[in-house]
Image (cartoon, rainbow, N blue to C red):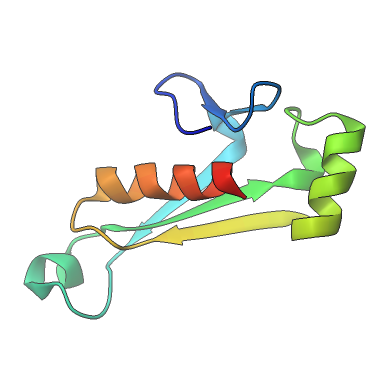
Length: 96
């Protein structure tokens, strides 16, 4: 499980989400972290549309829809780096 740096996010051995199916948005992170975190767009919000994904079989889609709903949203703002927060968001999506 985890993020692979190619065109797909590896969730399991049988589920690999094409990166073009992931929507990313970047905003300034609030709270502590100093001026860099509050001014730079380091917060990452990753959204995955389960209902329209080509990565899932009908059975997998039904399980994910029942457990998580039609859209999965993951936020990461733990780090000062947008790159690290993006990796964290992908890892969190894969672990769900």
